[in-house]
Amino acid sequence: MEETTSREKVLKKIRNALINKTENPYPSVDIESLVYHEFEDTLDITFAHEFTKAEGKFIYCENEKELYDNLISLIAEKKWVNIFCLEPDIKKTLDNAGIPFKSEKADFTKMEAGITYCEYLIARLGSIMITSRQTSGRRLNVFPENHIVIAYTSQIVADLKDALKNIKEKYINNMPSLISVITGPSRTADIEKTLVMGAHGPKELYLFLIDEE
Image (cartoon, rainbow, N blue to C red; front, top):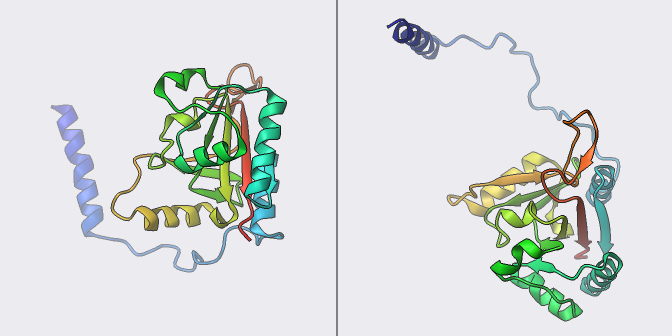
């Protein structure tokens, strides 16, 4: 009975607050001005700088041909055999580059590296935005030990709010059930303040940025 009374008291306070609205006690506060400093470089350079600061591996590609060459070099250097990909366009890229890959469900747990696209790149944070609406789905961004993301310069936005605005406009009334922001490879220092890489996701994160200009 006491619990019900307490609940009613809280609800009554909420109702009264909604009915008797108070004026803004700080009317002179400026909420329109920018909170962050202006960018000193272009968005692509800013993104690359922030991304590498977060331990991401950034690879710039002038065109698709350079993407092929860089992918081949990375895979050969790391000696990866099991590459997993679900994106149809990336599959064509891998085929054109002569890079063998797998996309069957039975091969998912055997992968050494997973390759995906992304939604947007957030310059100020050096972060990658992904959603569950992508062909790669939810698992391919967190399961592989090595995550390779292919993106284009047109996907770079200044701030997180810009990426969210674009997502809302892109999917309108069919929003993704999951929107994630990846900043560097997975890490944690929860246990004895010792930094452990790859604790909850990929140990290494690669971003291949293709210049569309």
